[in-house]
Length: 103
Image (cartoon, rainbow, N blue to C red; front, top):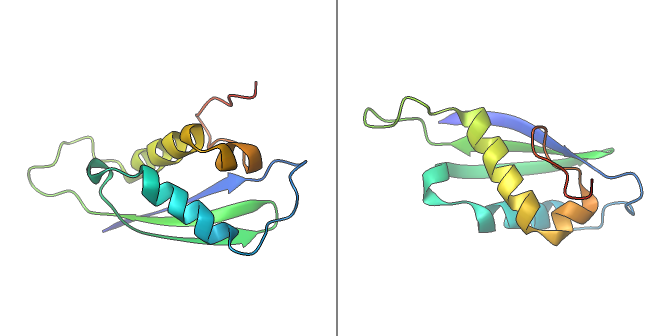
């Protein structure tokens, strides 16, 4: 299993996090995960102006493509979730490397 730490930064004009926000973000990520992502587990924690995420992915097997890169998988999943979720777009900046639709 491969572990990736990644975070989303909170937009400055957004109200403080509400109870259950971490669970909501994790649910959004799970809703947009595909079997190809190889996601096994996610945990999260609010920390100041960001949400910290630990994402666990299946390690590549012998038949896996050589391009298995957990950080890229995590960024792709976060980007896909951010584009599809109004709640994530409203509260958080997109992950690094993903264009901000508000610009």
